[in-house]
Amino acid sequence: DARVTQTPRHKVTEMGQEVTMRCQPILGHNTVFWYRQTMMQGLELLAYFRNRAPLDDSGMPKDRFSAEMPDATLATLKIQPSEPRDSAVYFCASGLVGSTDTQYFGPGTRLTVL
Amino acid sequence: KQEVTQIPAALSVPEGENLVLNCSFTDSAIYNLQWFRQDPGKGLTSLLLIQSSQREQTSGRLNASLDKSSGRSTLYIAASQPGDSATYLCAPWDSGNTGKLIFGQGTTLQVKP
Image (tube, rainbow over all chains, first blue to last red; front, side):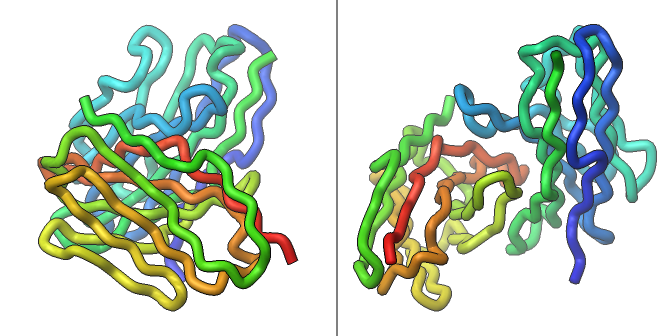
């Protein structure tokens, strides 16, 4: 049963620290998305990749967030320096865009910045 | 900019009722539309994907319809059960078939035994 995995599942850190979240998409999927969920804003798209190339990161605060896909099995989202307002659940999703298939979401990383 | 509204925001019903969740979107030039379920503290599970050429999809007790011209989708749940209690999210795909999803705030459903 293929699924998207994310690590860590929970992260508590202090303001100013670097945070790295990792995602392993489903093998064969060509598109990876990063979303953020908060009570106030709901689910927002931060960035996405197609065939490992970044296509859109307009949803990310560029000064502190960065997203990469070093290989087809790993996507990373980094926050440096972290701030309390970054506290949220970060979801990774993968899909085979161009087909009729759905997107599959990972379980999320719950980030708390103190 | 696409905006998605889901009504009602919350719903509490007794077990066995049939119910309808509503979703409206401002830009009708969408590609597909997906309905997701989210349990508390969990990720999202896709329930139904309606392709742009389709008007509805069915899976078990769930039926979703799509009217692109009016910017509306509905999720019908038949014979609701306590296990259906969750938040239901509507997410149109953007028109370019990039797979980008724009989410509504969701409808939180509670089904009482």
